[in-house]
Image (cartoon, rainbow, N blue to C red; front, side, top):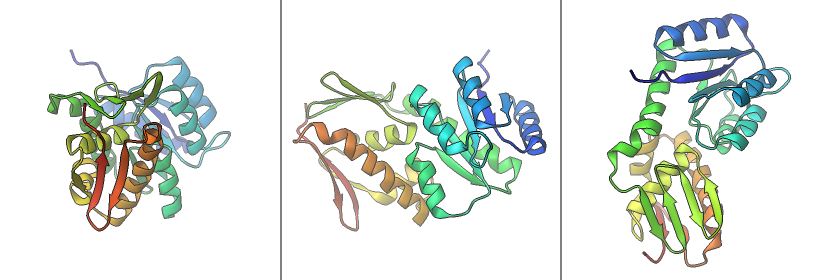
Length: 232
């Protein structure tokens, strides 16, 4: 029997939290509800979770702070933020913390389910679609399955979107990766907001790739990005 996906749900609105937990359980998930960020972090440290849904505005510890703490423990667990905020800056901050998606209240349960399923398809089934899981370029070794980028003794664990984006760049090594192609493959949408969030991930990947001067991740104006490196 396939193991149920275990979801950490951090939501301070007790009514909404209870409804979400019941809905997720009805759809075949395990769900643990915590009413503030501190309790959610304690639960995360004790349990084994496959997915986290975090409300941004919570007492004791907000969702962004909670995400930072979770990322210190697990770089790979998918994160989905729930928020009443609509400011683009808040969404960009969420993606900078490694969020996989962002859902603004009010939202339908069906939309939440579709978002969760889309993220799980990317993170759980993505590796099955690609026969090559180890990429070597310059002095780097990129392990797609384990979401790890290595150079010498330095090892960086990547988030799911960083992993998918770096894989596309590796598969197009020394060639231009079209922005629209990357957006549609990873975000399933080439909207302006998603393009902004992809730029955030490109910036983060550049930081990981600074250790080898022969490796460059460059912008190709009006077209996309190009990972330039000597192939192994």
